[in-house]
Amino acid sequence: MSKLDNYLEQWEEKIRETVGKEKILLATSGGVDSSVCAALLSKAVPGQLVCVFVDHGFMRQDEGDEIEAIFSNKPVEFIRVNAEERFLAKLVGITDPEAKRKIIGEEFIHVFEDEAKKLGKIPFLAQGTIYPDIVESGGEHGAVVKSHHNVGGLPDVLDFTGIVEPLSGLYKPEVRELGRLLGLPPSLVDRQPFPGPGLAIRVMGEITKSKLEVLRKADSIVRQELDQLTDKPHQYFAVLTDTYSVGVKGDVRTYDPVVAVRAVNTADFMVCDYTPLPHQVLRRISERITEEVNGASRVVYDITSKPPGTIEWE
Ligand code: XMP
Image 1 (cartoon, rainbow, N blue to C red):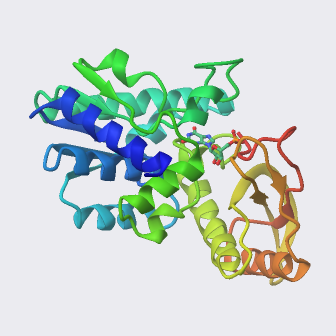
Image 2 (tube, rainbow, N blue to C red; image 1 turned 180 degrees about the vertical axis):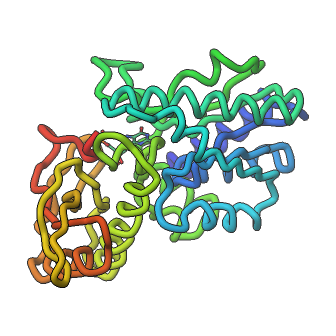
């Protein structure tokens, strides 16, 4: 029996013991971690899992709908909360990255709490926290690098009998492997990590609906182009900077934000190298973004590794 088979068996046992016949609530983001967590829980205690998907409005192009579609085929109670307006209202005038993360984390708790109250008493809470989340939030060693919004918070605010974090001993590659073991499709298991605060930390400076729209279009082009590579980087996306530059579209002068493209190779997302993308690919991305996206003036490529850079820009 492999190490992961053992891990799975032990956690299934532990969950059954902890939860008994009660219901268990999971905040799902549609990412790898919370999806694997959902699959594990529905295997351990079938029919007892309630998934709440707080859609903060910072998802990528069509992502919210895709997540809803994936979960509509699963034997779990799935609730989507469209909370974009609530989040945007809290973020008016906010430009500091840590402030954004904190506000989003707190609002996430409030929305989740409101939803949990509507559901009546659910004694247990599950979280898809993985080992690096705990480390990077200063939970075990060292200082806070960034506040990961799936760590802490919920247990303090909501009155749960118990918290279950079945992925807390695993690194990302092991979480994916566990997902495969649980029969999840490659499209979900091999999905790139996506931060809890979503595109809000990929729009530099103040977040607005129109900036989010520009970023969604640019990001979708980056992903379409890089998805076609046989040797794909491990994580890739676009960032909307708050640096404006002059351009020309047709005969018209433009003055719009610069889009940055980020693509990295990494074993564990704790350190990374920037990916030396072929110039033809970069050229195609640049041409498409400047032609197809209104509100983006030019495209730059981020050649920073981690450390000293982080993968996300905020
Ligand atoms: P950084 O930017 O710290 O990112 O080098 C390392 C990896 O973590 C992802 N990331 C997050 N994931 N909540 C998450 O669940 C977050 O708040 C968060 N911030 C960054 C990032 O995309 C990268 O894969």
